Every structure is written in C-alpha cells, then in structure tokens.
Length: 423
Image (tube, rainbow, N blue to C red; front, side):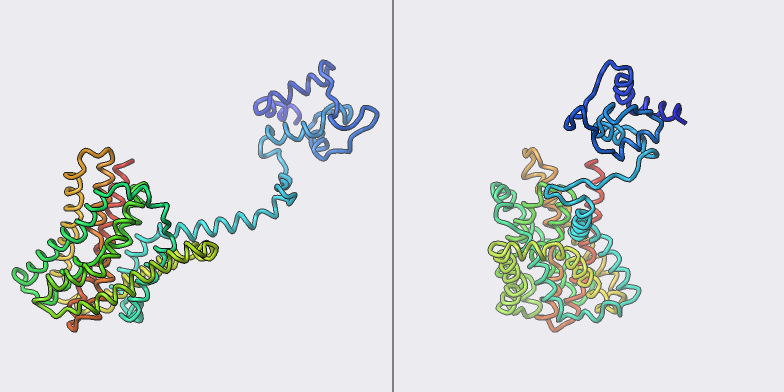
C-alpha cells in the first residue's frame, strides 16, 4: 500500500518526497515557524492524515503542519483527498456561508441570459399558435400597447448615456441606418404593397398592411441580433433603433399618409398620440429611473429579460392566433410569400447598400450586418397595434401579424449563418 502511494506522490508531487527525505536524513532540519523548540505544536489533523498514508513521522517537529497541509492538498490525487475545509472569507466567514451568494449570483446570471432563448421562444410560440390558437387568443389587441410599452421601458432601463458616446462618433453610420429605415424600407413596402393589389389581386387593405409595416421604426430585436453577431456594434444598433423610434412619432404617420392615405383613411394625430404613449413615454421613464434611482433599476433589471421574452412570445403568438382564419385562408399563402419577399429584400438592400457606402471602413462587414438587421427588422408589433386601432378593416392587420414572425425567424437565421462564418 505504501509503495503504491509513494509512486502516486512521486508522479504528482516529487517536491514532497524530496523535502521529506531530506528531513528524515537530517540534511535539512525544519522547525515550526511559531512554536519554540522546547514545546510541541498542537496536533494537526493533516499530520494524522499524512501518517495514515504511511509516512512514519518521528515527531511533530519533523515537518510543519502548515507545510504538510499545503503539499498534500495540492499534490495527492483526488481519490486520496478528504473533503476540503471551508476557506475563511475576507470578513472571517466560512466558505459555506458564501455558497448562497454564489447560488444567488448564478440565478441572476440565468435570468440575465434568458434572452438567449428568444429565437427558440419565437419559433415555439409560432408553432403553438398555429397548432392550438386558443393558447394565445386571450391576449387580445388591447394588451398590445401595454406590452410594447413594457418592452420600450426595458430598453430605457438598460440604456445609459455613456454607452453611446463612442457610437455617436459615427454619424455617417447612424444616418445610413436612418435612411435604411425610413427611405429604403418604405420604398420596398410601397413596391410590394402595389404588387399585392395589381399582380396578386389581393384586397387594397392587404397592400395597406404591408405598407404600414414598412413605415414603422426599427425593432428592438435588431439590437439583440446585432449583439449576438457583433457585440461591439450593439451600441450603434441601439442608437439607430432609438433614433428611428423617437422620430417615428412624426415620420410613421406622415409616411402612412403618403403611402396609404389615398387608399384608406389615416388618423395622423391619433397615430402621433399613440406612438408617444407606447414608445416615447416608457423609454423616457426607463432612462429617468436609471439616472436618478439606480438602486431600483439594479433590483428589477435581472427580472426584465425573462419578462421581455415572455411578452415577446405573447406578442408573436397572439397576432397569428387571432388572425388564424385569414392566415390559413386561400390568399394567406400569397400574403406570406409577399411578406417574406419584402423582408428578404430589406435585409439584402441594407447589407449591400452599406457595403457600397462604407467599403473603405476597417469594420465594413460588421457594419453591413448591423445595417442589414436595422433595415430588415422593424417593429411589426407597433404596426399591428396601429392597424387594429386606426383601420376598420381587420385585413390590414394580417401582414403585420405575419411580419412579426417572419422578421424574427429571418433575423435569427442570419444570426446563426453569420456567427458560423465568423468562426
């Protein structure tokens, strides 16, 4: 038994055997660093443990108990080691008292990283809404505005002025994102909205719904998609989305009047008031809370990601469930193809447009991906809320309902593709 253990120690801790052999041969006499020669130090459980391994120590002074503990605990294989003693903390508390804190921190980490489940939640809620619509039909249109307001409030709570100082130093990129949101995308919306009526023979309200989707601001999911692909570009993406969201109070009603006004009546003042309540006020409240009451923000910030994922799941599944008859109607496939073509064109246009403008930039690929997300992903839920509130024809809400799902699925598919290419 002693021979096998000695072999184990020779492999894992040769310095232990060398020091012990020197000590036994008398070439090196070790004295306890604290206790005098005429007194023996207290018995050490580590010394007893060393003797149990087969080392015949002649006296307690042959080897200091603190050195034995150090060498044995660091060198003896795991199968020979006992349960480690609690390590005192900085204030004298034992390590066992620190376990709850570690568990708490792990729970907080799980809560904060729950956004990583968002792509799976979007797909799952889509399938559930198609298979069993009653699971989402209770989340009626009157809940859309409060749900969007909560998501905007979460953005405000997680935003700080200092995070965006560097991103503001790139005004050309910010302006390009704005052009993609409110110039390129509305042109594509007008194109496919016209195609839906002229070539596909769909009702004018379907074309109006596609155009309405193209007139709203960028989606907050574009910020998350950018973070997953290019984390350093996330502040720039947030600024682009925030700018388009803030100015949507004026731009969205005006674009809706310009593109849809000749087809359906548009309540510009009502849209401005609704966007102010859904977007501007919650974001401002989150920023002010973060600025003047940081302790409250620190307390609620860990629970915001899982709640945001839950709210997003409801906002994705409910539109499909409530409009399931229209989606599964004979022209539902046509609307689906038009919405897919619209988003695909927006993603491609944002990618290649930014590539031409910023071809000399050192991070041109990251900029292309960021602007592609900004152009291809928009707040379809906002379009759906506006459609349900300001348009009497329920068919206007069908394209935004489908867009909510298609935009999310296409965006996170690009996240997977581009992340693999970066590897």
